[in-house]
Length: 193
Image (spheres, rainbow, N blue to C red):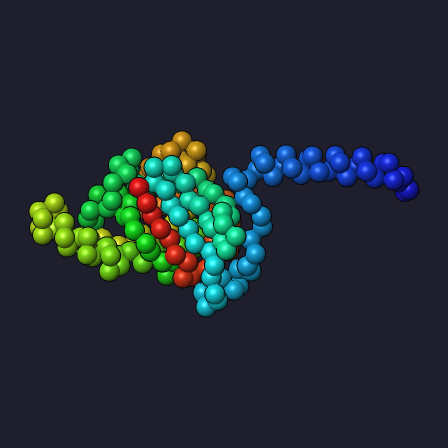
């Protein structure tokens, strides 16, 4: 089959419009395809220029690289109360600077990035609040905070800002598969109000 230069130009234009529309409608602000290969990320021993900022008030997880903003994903938490986590069981998401310490697959919601909560900063805040009487004497600090997916059929929880976790950060199942592929162990995660 022979195409003229004119026909080729028209087909290329149509493809560009369709591809542009597809990208705009089927991704949540993705800037470009991930630069790292999943096998490199799982090792976690490479120089990592990626970092994550979680903005609780905007329900957004933003990924940055050495050039700046990279991608944004919608998220939900455990409660509408955007205050800092005080103790185990309050369903709040902790604030501060954390690190991805483990990548694994959870049996219910699939891929997850486990954070190093509680870290030294978390213990300091917890002990200060306990000393001031802001936390019950028998309260524990808790743990197991992660960035993880919704269950496969429950992406609507993110679309409807339905906070359902015990203090973790929940990303749509399909978005979490993407994040899991290119976020390495060691990535710094800042959670802010």
